[in-house]
Length: 496
Image 1 (cartoon, rainbow, N blue to C red):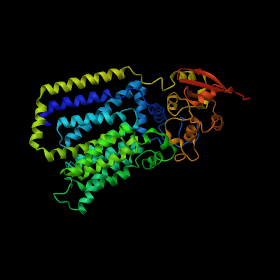
Image 2: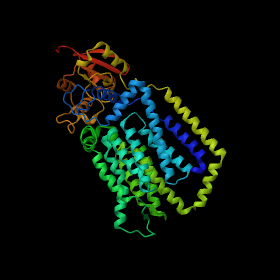
Image 3: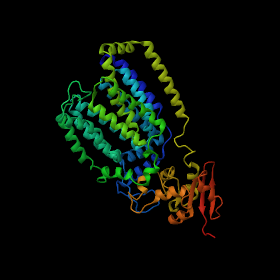
Image 4: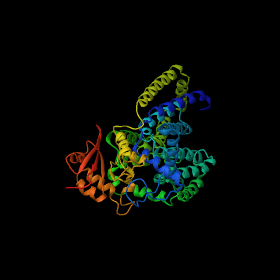
């Protein structure tokens, strides 16, 4: 890399602008409830473990990722949604650069590292590059793998302290996924233990890595357990994940569903590549690379939330295996010669630079046309009407899972928002809000029964919802406001 410093800078620049160009400008529903939660933390200086944003009383809320929410509020207060968008752009670019440098530290060529980084960004990164906890936790995971590589493979002890810091940051930006910090330690830990018990010959297909600082991985694992309690609400790092993967929310939340057929294509390709190399070639594979790749393939196929791990961190170890295959059948001299030809080809570099720059500029122009808040998804005009015309602090409004958080942004208490894990019995005993919303929206339970149970005074629904068809004919509900997308109803004072 020192011999190609100018080329490295150029390729890193292209990675940055391309990464930023695919970041979605439009905010997601989670972002909207981050801001009022952050506002509460900033103004009260407390994290009390209670919900203050729905109209339900005495619900426990564990403030997962409280630093992330506080940061979103501060950015929004100072710069509006533009500040949040710029933060996402910068963080996404940093993840891409960490990924690029991690590949280079694995001694891959500049062009292979560049290509794999672009592939990972397109197929994996676009699922996490948005204003949510996942973006910042994935930044921590990318940094964790980079530091593990430095500690265990390059023998740089300074990364031990960086890893402890990364663990603490991860805990407070997204404690729900904190256990995954240990998952990234397991392949190294497993290889250290196995290497003490089993000796592998030089002809074995699986080989041990030349790991250093072996005792540090055990020490790091133990320290990270205690770090997991260093959060304002004690122990949530080990309880929130269990709540998130249990109950009705798992069947409803898209992130917890298995990946679809189109998303399985990269998984199928990587499995086929791995199987072919292991079974039909003489390639020797490092044990830790095999464990990482197989582990992330399993994780990614189980649910949408884990999918980016396949092509981001798992993509690094899969590239290591593929490179081992190439080096088995192509000499280092030929690979080096081909790499130098690419490095020195002005025509090739110019073509790549122009094509990627033009494509990135086009994507930026498309993003510039979009609004921060999509009026086809969120009730912008209806929210304004509620704020101007209704005693919004004292109404009990039925909302949709997808846009409840937008009303909370403006201080309107709602029936439900996208904090699914809070509205289930696993988190709050006796709470069936999410289940009731699903059953009522699907028509399995009559809306009048649910509305009476929760004392609903107002209803805000998509025009396409089944409930809206019934409310249009229900004389007990008066239409207050209707747009092409939403309808707002008010319950009459007395029913016939």
